[in-house]
Image (cartoon, rainbow, N blue to C red):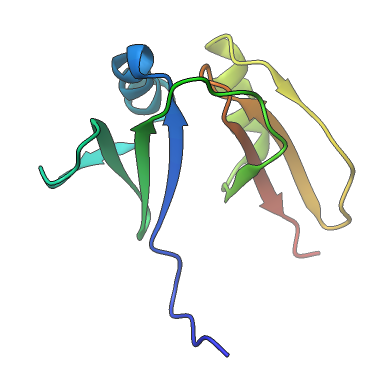
Length: 121
């Protein structure tokens, strides 16, 4: 058995020619706080903070849409959806899970993301 302590970071990939666009999307629209990224990597990228978890953007040519995704709990699901749609980000629904309000979106680079709010009622 592995004794996990916590999730450390999430990594998404974007085409190399869209890396700066990804940095702008995740800082200006999503609102992530950039953080230090060591200069030891062969490929360019950016690091951000989401609470106590890192969010990393790396480059990868030839990306295709996938069902894989990352989910983030938010405080206000309705306001989050309105904010994304105001910025032209298409949101969509999938299966309903009792006790959770949720929706998905694809970032401009094909990464599937889920935002959810847990209803403790």
